[in-house]
Image (cartoon, rainbow, N blue to C red; front, side, top):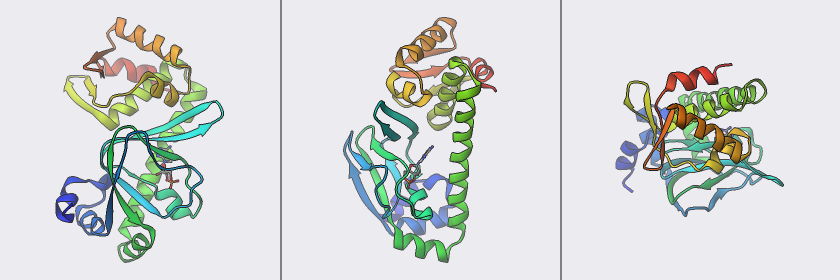
Length: 226
Ligand code: CMP
């Protein structure tokens, strides 16, 4: 793809436009099929990525299944942690549907970032944001009942994929299975399903064409507050 067109179509997670435009020139485009892994936890790092089109899951696999740490939407940057701390990949990244990635080779990134230190500041922001989200979900796990944890997860997804469709009404424009939701919450699918059904009855959420729609964000915020 023409780098100029690409630079206009991708936000690179809020990186200032001039830097995004310059950086995207060293990117290599990479398609990825639904269900395929971009890389696995423990792999050595050869660069970082931006999601141009599609959607990805950040997961950790264990003997008992997998934990979904996050879902990534277009514009997200990932794979920066191992690049900067020199450790292996901290999680696996799997395509939820057919996706398109921009890959940034580590040597080109180091060179570019040394010439443009604002890139380091930006990467620190991304890592800081993730740490805050992880802290919030860690605290929720020990301090909130299941309803609060599900509310916190749905609100987090609405920050990532939400479209405001009315006062206090947010459509979460991303197909999320109950299994993924349960893996993010860290609870059994049946229990998460029970909470969602209760909320549908109480009018807190609805389903519109397979998407969750938050009908009463204030009620969910109240449940999610520590
Ligand atoms: P890296 O460790 O290189 O490879 C896995 C990537 O997943 C990591 O960089 C981050 O970009 C991303 N990642 C790891 N943990 C989280 C998290 N809790 N939330 C969102 N993204 C994450």
